Length: 80
Image 1 (cartoon, one colour):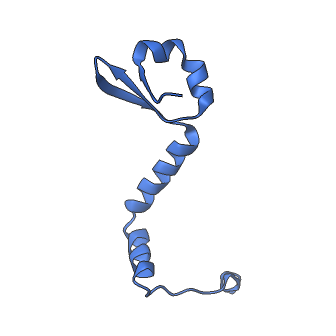
Image 2 (cartoon, helix red, strand yellow):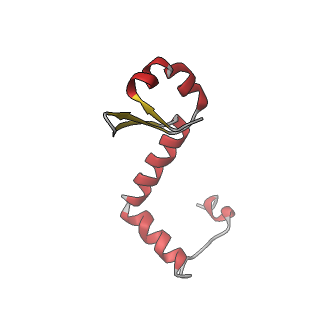
């Protein structure tokens, strides 16, 4: 299936396009004006954006990548 549709064509085929669960771009006058993004993909994008905007999460990622991460067994979570 193609991934770019004119807005009029997309409007006429919307139920089928939604069921396809693909990211699509919608164009009007040779300009992309919108995207149709499946829910699962959008949730993943939002989660990634939240992590990138969280300074503590980013520090933890950098610490892990530099090999300075500290790991504990899951059983440590059960200890009071």
